[in-house]
Length: 296
Image (cartoon, rainbow, N blue to C red; front, side):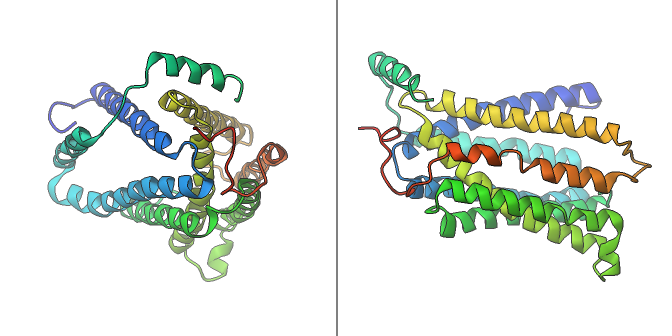
């Protein structure tokens, strides 16, 4: 991307290869986190996940802050060239990882036991929104780690789902222009809306990671955790496709926003669909030892 890419096909290939490399390393990192979180209480596991995702959010903040100014000053290819060397910093600390290969016999036992427990604004403004959402993501991790990691998962999902759906309705104010009648500009309203929803979204996503980590049996951390996250990503993709179909059905285009408010309402109400499944989650003390996830 920094040197020879000069058309959309080579750019697409470079992005695919880069994403593939990130996916590989992400699975490895997830397996390391899960290995350390497995069998721990929800509170301890939550602290570990908070540290990891907080670090990720901090990196996103730094990237969002400097990326725009670097592009303006030095150009796109320079930024691609600089960021191409950043993964080398990660690979350099790989020698510090102390791992022990699980014997084949133990791996087989783990596998058998697991089967029984199963808005069109300027680029500058968009950069500001990215920065705000990165900060909000870090804030959401902090809120979860400080106040929510000891709260039962069922309560967290119930409150955040209902609250998120209700707050998401505020986007109707933006698309109808009611925010301007209240004296709030589109820019500030978008930033505030993104801030609140991102904090809530990150705080509600952390329990998902904790639950997924605690469910992973010995020896298959990377495989199972990656599978769970793939299912989550598949749900996001499916939601995007349904949303696109609904957008087309309602006739919402770049030139026609007549039914956009209705589309927002339907999308926010759809987030309430998982609520009947909350009964499948444990409602006990999160710090209590769980016989199914505790490993002797």
